[in-house]
Image 1 (tube, rainbow, N blue to C red):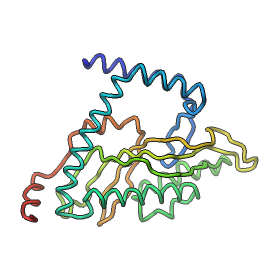
Image 2 (cartoon, helix red, strand yellow):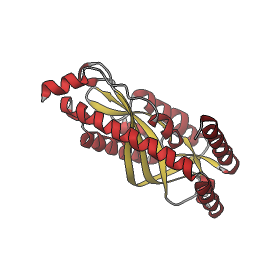
Image 3 (cartoon, rainbow, N blue to C red):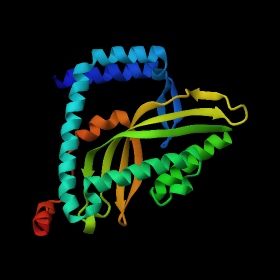
Image 4 (cartoon, rainbow, N blue to C red):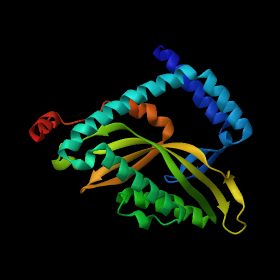
Length: 244
C-alpha cells in the first residue's frame, strides 16, 4: 500500500466518521464519544466500513502487534533494574489507576484520585469538564464494567535514576457506559444508555516511585503511537548485564 493510498483511506474514514458521528461529551478526559455507532444504523454502517477497510484494519493491527511486542521486550529489561517497570507490575498499577479514575469521575470528585494523577490532569478535569457540567445542570453518567485489554504502545524512558519521569502510552479497551443527563428531570440529554467497548490511549508517568495518569487521548491515535520509535537509554543493556 503506497503512502498516497494510505492517506486516501484515512481521509475517507475521517470524513465518514465526521458525517455519521453524533458527538457527546463523555468519560474521563471529557473526550468525544460517537453515539451514532451505538444505534442500529450506526452498527450497520460500521460493519460495512469494517468490510471496506479490512486491509487497512489488518495493516493497523499488524503495526500495533509489533509495537506491543517491542514495548514488552523493553519493559522486561527495565523490570530487571526497577521492578516497577516489569510488565505484571505495570499492568497492575495501570488497572488500579484506570478503575479509580472512573470511580472518581462517576462521583464528580477528582480529589479522590489526587494521588493517582498528576496535578495538571486533576485540575484540568475538575475545572474544565466536571464543574462546567454542574454549572449547566448536567451530569455525566460514567460506569465501568471491566477492562478487556491493556497494551503498551510507546515508551519514553528517562535517563534519570530509577527512570524517574518516564512515560508510557497504553491502549486500554474497556466496557464503559457513559451519557449526559439533566440533573432535575433525569432525562438523557446526549448519548445513550448501555455498555460498549471503548478504546482510549492513557499516558502514564513514573513520578516519585508511582505510576500517575498524565493524559488521555482518543483511541483513534493508537496507530500514531504504535509507529513511534521507543526512547530508551543506551545504558539499559549494560544495566541488565550488571544485574544478571
